[in-house]
Amino acid sequence: MQREATLETIKKAFRKLAHDFHPDKNPENAFAAARFLEIQEAYKVLSDPRKRKDYDRELWLSGKLHEKNLELSPGNLLNELKILNAHILELDVYRMNKSLLQQYLLFLLSDERLAVLTNEPSADYITAFTSEMISIATILPPYLALPVLARMKYAFASIGPALSLISISEQKIKRTYLCTQYAPWVILTTVLLICIAMYYFSR
View 1 (tube, rainbow, N blue to C red):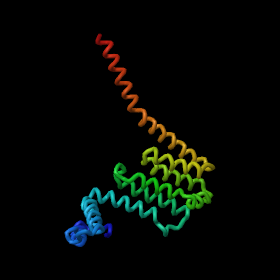
View 2 (tube, rainbow, N blue to C red; view 1 turned 60 degrees about the horizontal axis):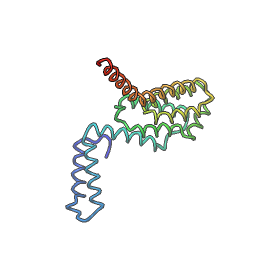
View 3 (tube, rainbow, N blue to C red; view 1 turned 180 degrees about the vertical axis):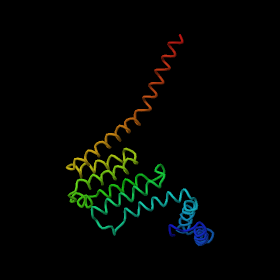
């Protein structure tokens, strides 16, 4: 099924496949029964505009992870991040698969790609790459973002401007994480103190 397929095309394909694999036509056929359930699930996703968008996002990122024909050069790797940043601007970041996004960022920071990046003599290029990477990483929850920043910190330890950007972002993410972790306890403690104060003042 092509990504550009219309709803009518999807319905026709679903009807044909559902007819071919329907349990009534394939009694006691476990494969057909399982396939029929898969077809139903796929139709639920592809016939719902919102679910289909989510599916397309994941398909796009998954395709990037398995892309074989990208020539490894500093310019191409930076361009990949710019394309990803532009793509993310069109998405609902709250609904996207953040684990898959982290996988892709770490894929761009694999040993093979880091070898290409660190051969780039321009500190400005590394800083630009870092800035693009951080812009994407900050969308991730802390537990997914911090490993990406740690990987960059290790790779660009000798590039002062890039290292500074990474450290600042790392501190912000850690502060946000701590606030998120301790906020419920602070609120609970505050409420308890107010209740105790109200009790004593009302006596």
